[in-house]
Amino acid sequence: MEVILAEKYGFCFGVKRAIKITEKIAQTNPNTLTLGPLIHNPLEISRLEKNFGVKVQENINNLGQSKSVIIRTHGITKQNLETLKQKGVSITDATCPFVTKPQKIVEEMSNNGYDIIIFGDENHPEVRSVMSYSIKTPIVIANIESLKEIGKIPKKIAIVSQTTKQIEKFAEIVQYLVTNSLEVRVFNTICNATFENQEATRNLSQKADIMVIVGGKSSANTKQLFYIAQTHCPDSYLVENENDIQPSWFESKNICGISAGASTPNWVIKNVEEKIKNLKYP
Image (cartoon, rainbow, N blue to C red; front, top):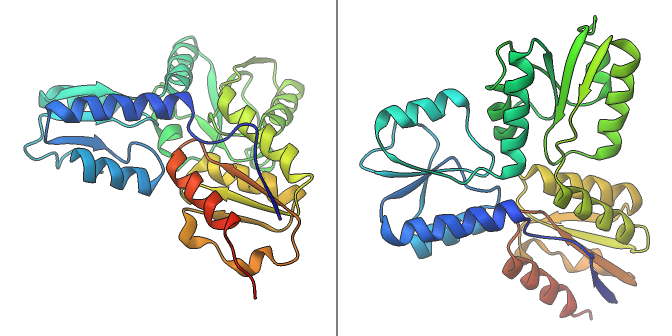
């Protein structure tokens, strides 16, 4: 069986930047916390805790004795940022610049009287952080169907997207808004790394007869890669590490494609690749 890695996969710029920042801070601040998981990959979060003592705290009111708090790549709400500042802790912002961008856009457009529409998952920390920069409660839509269900479309709209969404679905939503609203300001906030990883996964899954997507199962961008792979290659699987691999998946397969989410470290991808290449059959 031939094993092929996608042309683009794994760590994106924002994740690399956040990990580098965190490791540097933790070397001089032994009680460093991240407010929420730094990235959506439990294996990398465990490595940071084991090697650098970085712990995760979900509740902003339970920071304990920590004097150093790192803001996760997905960002935090504007209100939580103000709360952190009032606590007098040392704040290091590891928010991905591709997430900071829609935060600023939403704040500016909202101040200028636009209703905000966000294409994304309302429960995702990135989307919650972006939502908090709007004066009025934004409209969050998961797909075009949920957009059609909201009823009357506001007359003056600014739309942004969660950074990990598919560009084709974003374009479909934009087209509907342009047809049904008087003024639409469109901001494509899907990051380049997401687009490149998705395109590479799409291309590889069209020629593979089995696809393995590596990443955290709570990672939005990893799940998007899995959905794309599954569309073109029904025998697609999402794994967090090599221990999830089942040999029976690969029987009678000729080409195995591997891709990985933007928060998946290279060492995890390598372990999965080696496990697949060394599979033994009776």
